[in-house]
Amino acid sequence: MPTTFAVAGKGGTGKSTVAGLITRALRRAGRTPILAVDADPNTSLDAVLGFRPAKSISDVLDATKGMREIPNNMPRSAYIEYQLAECLAEGAGIDLIVMGRPEGSGCYCAANHLLREHLDRLIGSYPYVVMDNAAGMEHLSRRTTRDVDRLLIVSDPSLPGLRAAVRIAALVRELDLAVREMSLILNRADGMPAPLRQAVAESGLQLAGLVPLDPAIPAFELDGRPLLDLPDETPAARAVAEILTAALAAGAAR
Image (tube, rainbow, N blue to C red; front, side, top):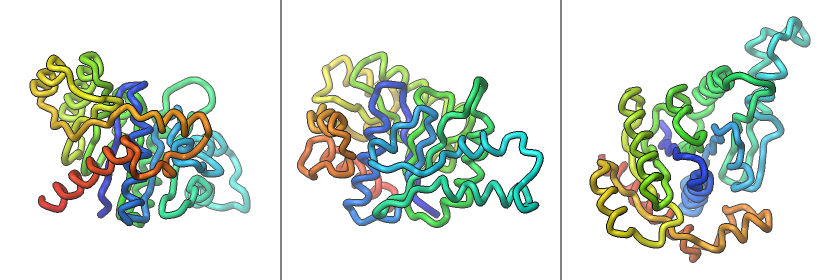
């Protein structure tokens, strides 16, 4: 079974950045191959990693929705599986699959269901999986996130951000999702003021660590460079590598 990390958090906390840095740290540690999953309709993990598949899961869903005839009289399930093969982008030690945004109005339930089914078939081929989830909590109620070894809830270093993280953790428990461990990451945090430190202590969330504000990250983003290329000595890369090392050690000790 793979070791699966899922990243959640409200919009604007930098969860896709954290997901990308976790993927980077896994590859730097030689823990490959890695399946990176962008389960956020507002796709951004591809830019963080620097490559993108030819199609998204939603592209396949939109193309096959309502099809009356399947080419060459193929079974519908076989045709969809064939199309889904183009949804995987292969990189150096990292493969990426993207959910995407379905066309038109309406919810993403069908795309989420298709993503889950396809992931169930893919995941067995990878020892490590990193999933970047949609902002907020909707992905949890749709159960896109399941069978997760560690759910990393990303917050900014603020009391409103922490309250949102606590609500996400509460929803995980309410839905009884298969999440073995949950922990909190404070992103863009150069320290913890006393009120925030007290609020974290009272939240019931395990603090995995702080990722400092790092000027290299916006510089890379402006240049269109993937965060996979961040030097090891950059503060954010170093902090996430330490968080990952501790998480892997805790998992091995269980």
